[in-house]
Image (tube, rainbow, N blue to C red):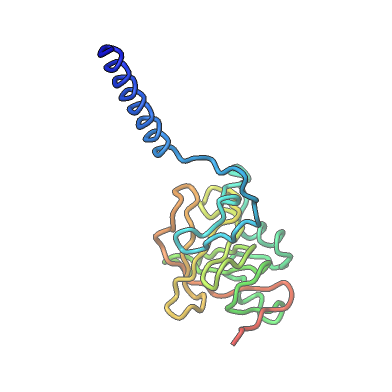
Length: 195
């Protein structure tokens, strides 16, 4: 009888140890959510650290297109300006509405970094927040590539879109340079401020 009691105690201890091990394993692995009704997805928490939705990250669409920024911006935006990007802002005067406010479809005109004879044009595809937009453009990395959904952050001290940083798609981070923005050329009516 004593032998049976010892065996039962050992089996109980072994069973308790097994249950503890199973519970510990479950606590380390997240349990699936079952039976919870899925509601509408929460809007993404846009920020300068997370400037895009994970479902639509910025990407290089065509790395071998050998396209320059000007013909790409002209084709995508409908703004019919020709010549180097550094001449677009002046050429748009009197022909297209110009403003300091981004809007979908507008062409953002930037000055060249440390070189006034250069410039860049990109087409705004989305206004994410008051300080972040997304653009599509060509040849930003100087390889003739087309990049889409690229975040651009206003870093100007007065939030007037006069200075920006551009997301570096290959590295997955904000670029280190600050670029001066001349403004936005609108194919149609320019947006007005909300003040």
